[in-house]
Amino acid sequence: GGRGVLQLLGYTEESGEGLSFPADREGPDPPRVASVTADVLVLRAELDLLLANQHTNPQFFSEILLGGDE
Image (cartoon, rainbow, N blue to C red):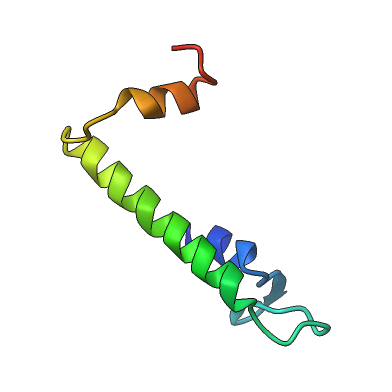
């Protein structure tokens, strides 16, 4: 979920308002934010295709999820 993505970006301090950066960090690393954002967007697009049964290579995900056994 969203909390997991924020934690990947460095928001790891719990507060009453949600997550924030640790005191010793100023903010997110822009290249890291771009990388995580791109990964999330691509994954969402891939999952949408799978759910619509329109993905051109659904076996790719079976191989990943099953550790290459299938």
